[in-house]
Image 1 (spheres, helix red, strand yellow):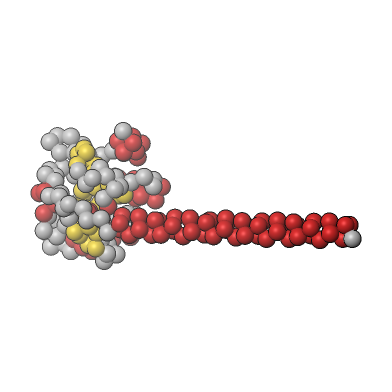
Image 2 (cartoon, rainbow, N blue to C red):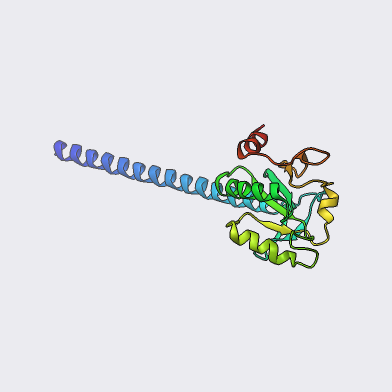
Length: 200
């Protein structure tokens, strides 16, 4: 009889321990799920906040259309380094520089590259259709870096571009960090020189 009592007590203890372990594991899993959901919610909130940041517009900001018909706004690149290359189709140094910028656009991930072309008379004369000349250059050289046409030439004035090509380095805050080109200085740089300036 005593042996049976001991077995019953032993089974009861095992049953109680099993229930406690089950309840304990259930509580731990519930805590983990709550923590995971909190992390997900925090991430969603962080992303929503970052996507809804309103940046202060600067004098150097612009909105232009690229060769694909897409609207490009400089303010949309806040938080990233930007390289702006001002050029003209008829300019021989530009014809060498733009393919380098195109390569960097494809290879270098730590900055955004934009080019702004000035619509004006090309080497074919005053009446030549500059848009056709620009598109022909883009096609012939497989250019996929954004090419923005500054119809009103406002940005050439705004950035005080006096020589082609000119390269403007914009920092993450949308401020001009450096301008290369103009006042007797060539704006042509090698890929290595551009990367060095971006990383300095």
